[in-house]
Length: 304
Image (tube, rainbow, N blue to C red):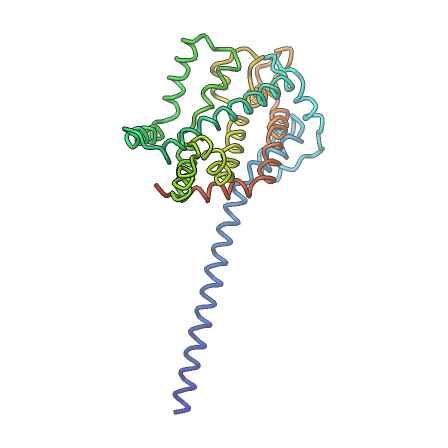
């Protein structure tokens, strides 16, 4: 009997050992894969920083991976990036434009998103499901098609070469409406019924109850819209040929061009320095507010 008991205990111990080894092995493989993926993801950013500190001759002779380390740190690339280029774009002007467009379109877009999400989450009106389905269907349409229609609309309204042409298209986002609508749907119906019994209007209930509860999602939407506008390039380049109304991404793309127009070939290290300059604020903002972004997205849920 004791021999059987010992055999059973040995089998249990062996099973636990095998299970532990399998768990450690699977976790090790997982972390190796994640590490490789992280290195591959961050490599372009590292290369951008290193290239921004290279001389033009070293970058042009760059062939092997070991040549990535700058021979000498050319910090003047950063000061040269701020100089006016052959297209007449100025960093200060582009920065002011970006801040104005980002704040105005984000604030107006947040108001539109909040009211629209509230209507689809709480109000009852004829055709609500059909309209919401049609809105979601637009998410399946390639963005290039919207670019064409928006361009035709802006042109017909004579709004090209103006900041208004940058603000209007960035105001509406069906995805953010969908995200906030799902968050509003998670708020218990009992709160809404109790508010109506107390004579609270829909407008007051929205701003006093729903908006504070959904604040993590609203903060996420606010930050993501700022990041999206900060990185926008195609639309500002398309509707604004005047350098006075372009954004930081356009300034970065045109940096490194000789100011006298003597050459059409850009100086890539200076262009990389410009990319680092406009990336740092986004990186700092993401590191400071990443918990709000993750919390807001995770709380949006899938209800409704």
